[in-house]
Image 1 (cartoon, rainbow, N blue to C red):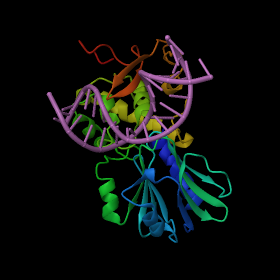
Image 2 (cartoon, rainbow, N blue to C red):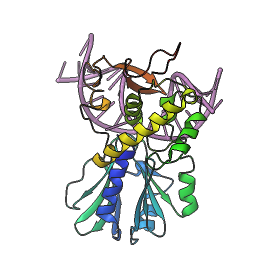
Image 3 (tube, rainbow, N blue to C red):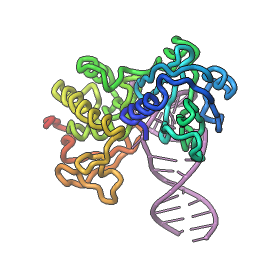
Image 4 (spheres, rainbow, N blue to C red):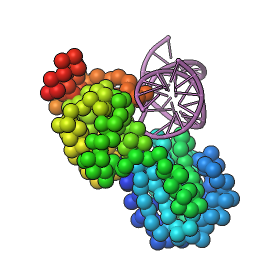
Amino acid sequence: MPELPDVEGFRNVLQSCAQGRVIRRVDVRDTGVLHGVSAPRLRDALEGRRITRAERQGKWLLAHTGGPTLALHFGMTGRLLCAHPDDAADPHDRVLFTVARDRQLRYRDQRKLQGLWLAENHSDVARLLRNQGPDALTVDREEFETALASHRGRVKAVLIDQSVLAGLGNLLADEILWRAGLRPTTPANALTEPERRRLYTQMRRTLRPAVTAGRVPPHPTWLTGHRDTPNPHCPRCHTPLRRSRVGGRTTVWCPTCQGEEKSNGDGN
DNA sequence: CGGCGGTCCTGCGGGC
DNA sequence: TGCCCGCAGGACCGCC
């Protein structure tokens, strides 16, 4: 699930639930989500420390303490929520952080594809994030276009490559390409200047409301609102949507709205 | 570098 | 009902 808008939502959860508060207790219920740190070490490093700032970079969420930094990644099924410590824990609540008598941050994740890291200092943080491209929410147009122009891969694959641009996932990439009217299989560096510009504009227009909603909204006027319906049609032109595989991911697109076959590419 | 397939992990929904 | 399979909004690794 989690793409940039979701993680932005988790950042808000972290902020409103725990920012400025001292971590009283760390309860690791499943060590399978810990990476490069033991449960005792995580506890010792964080208990008694105050969460000073919540930061998102791409799909990463960072909880700074002034000392060590907790880094969270949500994979496909992770989420962060604020509960009452007395509320029954979900079976997928892997780590609980009690931050007040009545507040507990919970890292919940079904599949455990990613998890939690402990960065002891700034260089540890830098190491964790070293492969991240510019954040999709703050990248400027020039940097975005340069990044696309320097990759020969298919534009969909390039958009979800976190080392090129950080934050977009499978759903957002499909949504943005559909809005921009571009075939997911077009080589990124073959896009024309107007196409690259369109892509950037539509990325911004997609991200803004998605961030507000805290997810990619399954709204009927969005492509995403149709991808899981039985017989999906394009919300704009009603052509049956196509399903294919790009960059190893299920890709949904409209053959009518998203460009002609590239033989004599008139570019629309 | 790019593309592909397998791997990590768990749960679901469909088909037999 | 039970079982097996494919699939899922992520990412990494090795191979060609």
